[in-house]
Image (tube, rainbow, N blue to C red; front, side, top):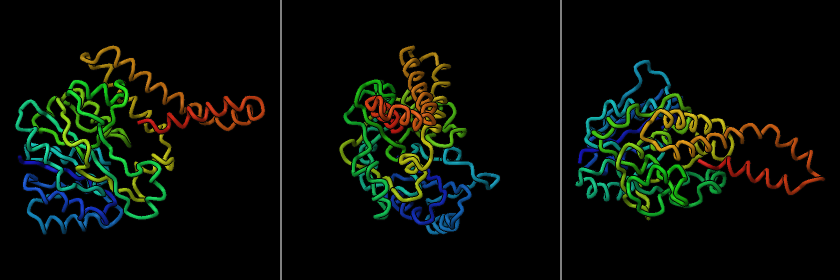
Amino acid sequence: MKISVIIPVYNAENYISQAVQSALQFEEVFEVILVEDKSPDNALIVCQRLMEEHDRVKLYQHPDKQNHGAGASRNLGIQNATGDFIAFLDADDYYLPNRFDAEKELFQNPDVEGVYGAIGVHYYSEKAKEQYYKIFEDRLTTVYKKHNPQDVFPGLLNMKGSFGLFSLDGLTIRKSALSKVGQFFKTQLRLHQDTEFIFRLSFYLRLYSGLLNTAVAVRGVHENNRITQVDVGKIKPSSTRIMLWREVNNWAQHENLISNDIKKHIERTLRSYQIAEASVPRKWGMITKYLFTDFRSIKSGLYNINFRKYLL
């Protein structure tokens, strides 16, 4: 195997060295591609040093040297990758020694176009753990049991009960299969480009489960994670998820191979977020209105808002 590991780098000077070293431990890793995205810290200097120290580390920036986001940075990495397989890693995360154990076996079958595994969580500080433990606890992010490839797409859409999920850190793709996907990461999405990309991958490619009961990579949680700030409400989650599901819906409606049942399910999911977004400004008025007359409705309404807030 010749694996290209793609790492978008933004504001990660304290973490990027660990991420790179965790990828270089594998002989199968042919190259580590760093895409520095105009970080406000000293990440570029750290990346330059890593490139000088390791022959397998390559460093890129966007042609205009400006910030373009994680999706565009991953796209640039894919375009410059020369390995036969693509793996991803966030700059503040890291691989574990078993990262490619299942992949080395499964990819011997040419029908396997992608393999996904479980990831764990690491808190970089007690403050980060105090803030975000209620979101991640010490759980694995994983798919709960092995599934046939054709069941992965509807499973990720929550159409098959308790399915679970996987992240880019635990995903490896056969590079030649990416031609089936069309556009790589949707750069118009501010967040959740990875979720939208995984949805399309799971529809077009034959994705197989690797290690599901033990972590193959670790999500690093600290105070400045953009996605954790969304999860705890520091960044408004509903609008970014509306953008995600609107993009998924637009794609699905133009894909003739997607069944009408799935298209309707995606439309309903988008609509649920739109309803939740519209209801938030009225929440406190609702509480005032029914405080003494219908407390049960208040309780139910707040529950529904919070439930939608923490959906994917």
